[in-house]
Amino acid sequence: MDKKREKRKHDHIEHAVQLGPGPKSPGWEDISLVHQALLRHDFDEIDTGQIMFNKSLELPLIINAITGGAPGLEKINASLAAVAKETGIGLAVGSQMAGVRNKEVRHTYEVVRKINPQGFIMANISALAGPQAAREAVDMIEADVLQLHLNAVQELLMPEGDRDFRSVAENIGEIVKSVNVPVMIKEVGFGLSRETAVELYKLGIAALDISGMGGTNFAAIELTRSGQKSLDIFKGWGISSAASLLEVTSLKLPIFTMVSGGIMSGLDVLKGLALGADVAGIAGLFLKILIADGERELAQKVMQIKEELQISMMLTGIAKLTDVSTIPLVISGETKNWCEQRKIDIEHYGKRALPEKKPAEVIF
Image 1 (cartoon, rainbow, N blue to C red):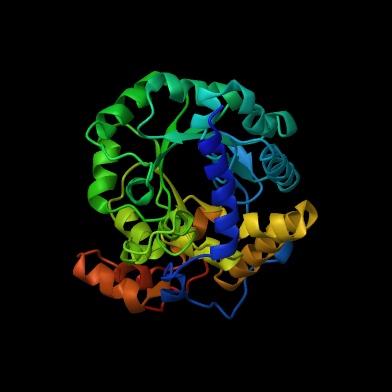
Image 2 (cartoon, rainbow, N blue to C red):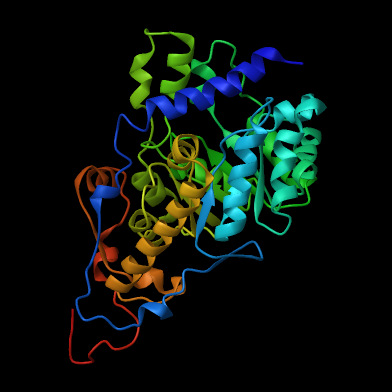
């Protein structure tokens, strides 16, 4: 058994709960959805449902990759799976390399499918893993989608981390060809750029999780875990979640997009979707609630997020998520500055018009 790997899994949970997000902002305060004072819908009509790779979700939300792979962590994954089943949202497990290498800890991942047999579940393994390991990760939990995580910053700051990334692009392409489920590329909290998104699309991946800066900070976690101080400058490294999402959606690629990184509310979810994402992911916030207050409080938090999303949809004039791209919004602050210098067109977001009921004589 790999005791060092198991200890690292527990350390990640402990430090993720203690450290919190940041230190920099994910940028959601820079996104302002335009308020529509003349409401047009009944609250009971507001439909938060979303389809993700042929499976229905009650709201566009995923419990993003958190843990698994060491004794005791099956309790966390069991609770997460139970909440996902109860509330009708998706779930991704943490990196499964431990389970691929050690059959004795596979149950810490397999529990999610046992508890939620019909749910939407994503497998997770490093983009540096081989195709055989990727297939085992998918089979282990009968996954609907495979997340391949890109965690270069984390690896470079980890004393025992990988240093050779020369084969990662080629490896991703091989995995895409070898697994029988769609492949999602997931950053782990430092964002995806346009350049990277284009390269990944050419490799045949089906989805992107931009996972921008401002949520769980694996640079801070690894530096705290190792006690290093000399590399603290990298605690603020990355592209904010809002800016990263705009980097990717500005390309208009025919690809499924998940936004994560500092999502804290249903309003944040709607902001992400209005910028072009299909679903949102939350990890750190959910982990803290589960550890501090338990499964029941976590389920209530998910339902609070649903209510916040419904109210936000009402106040922006839409009743279903298929109309989210019509919501006018204003981008300001650091996110606007970023987009201007990166030549990302954001002017059209403020000129959007809601469907139907727009007076013909009004010209914007």
